[in-house]
Image 1 (cartoon, rainbow, N blue to C red):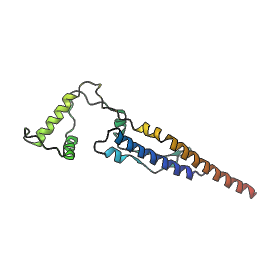
Image 2: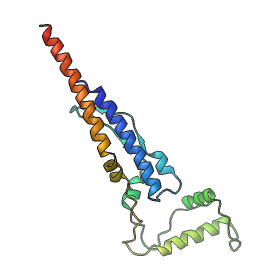
Image 3: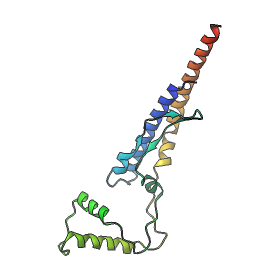
Image 4: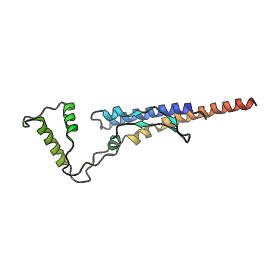
Length: 168
């Protein structure tokens, strides 16, 4: 059975879910640099798999699942890497306090401070749920658009079958 309408509807549904995900990221306060929000996208390759199912995918940066569920920090005293701190300082345009003789010593002090604050194995970041929440928010839209599209595809397939049988 041809399912072009269903594939098109699935692509629209995934676009809507991606839009809602980005909106949820901004609304729940989990956007720092905006990189995760910019990375959320419909891969636009809705296809029929080998079983005949219509399948589509959304993609985002790997840490999206960690933002959604929260994640455990490294163990006590573990220092974070230097580069992300350096990038953060440059992005925020923070000036080095005068008490530090150079940037390297200042970044080391920040890293050491973070390492001291992380105590115990149960330390976790706050979860900012947005993945399941986005699919649930788009559920009504998805059900309606996918049902209509499937109905159109079934009607088209039946019309072709009836025309072919009338020729016999």
